[in-house]
Length: 465
Image 1: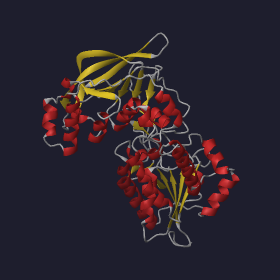
Image 2: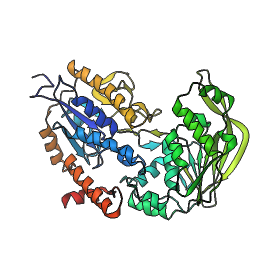
Image 3: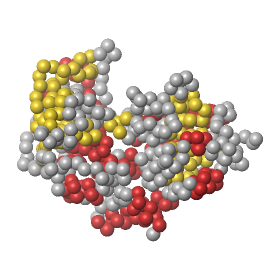
């Protein structure tokens, strides 16, 4: 058998998941000079880019420009995008082992963590992940319904996703018209009755996970006044001590929060209130089982042995009247069929990106992982680049050492034939570029960046036209 990684027998790699981690992994693979590598990237949706398309807030268009990097990767003649192909439905892990020397799983983290309090399952209590996917036009979530007839909403969590949810709820129609928000979400939010939104953080301003630019943006909404309670904007002694070694970005974040605490109402039609050192303890429903109130406990901070500041409950409580709750306290991964999964951590168990058997702790030959499904939902889009690079270095090390799968059909043509036999309809990257052009043209006609396809059948119909 000729060596793997040559022009006559390229190293064949399957990447499952077309988000940032997958594209960064492909980018690093193509920089390899000693081995000839071919990459097939699978995604169950016809569209690439993962959370860049379906998770980044529609009013943050600049962040989405990272797709230009991914487009360059896709332009490599040894790259193929196979969209609309789902692991478990169209192909299995065992199937992939017959066509590829290495398999990389980079499917992200698609669900949320529950609050774990009484009433969490009441009507009107939603995962922020679903709301984000809904307003971004993700096909799986376009039929979701959110009770926007409610006037008061609580968003639990102080990460960037929580801030995104609150900001979108407070935007005017005119502001949303400048974005690529899904058209049905634009209409629903334009008719929203939401008047007051709370963002609830269990720790103090210094520990908030959102960034200075995110919180600054909250104070610049066209028709929404943003407030912070003065007493909650002040730092306790432990936070003050910690801030002595903080970087400029964190200092600026606290400064902005404290500036907001001095704001006076200006007569705008909506109110956004940032709260700190409070935790929900119960959601209370009405006679119809719909959220009507949220019980909160006030917290204080204490230092752990490791030096981190954690919240603990005091004896002070309060009750908020809210008709809708979004929980945004962390994403978690979803198991893939045929792939080991650590249930309590919500990730694929791995060592440096090498997938390991949960029982033996030994690496599985030819199987790797990158991104949130590898490390958990931490960091920003760019964090996936070094994460993917770590995994790829181990993939290349294994390939050079001959530690790869031994596929019986290691060619692109064989994969195409297999999918044809199963009557699958893979969407190529050229197909995606056509869809992209359709969306951009539809947006241009309405004076918007783009108008998205939000049904898979509509995407496929457009490609047949």
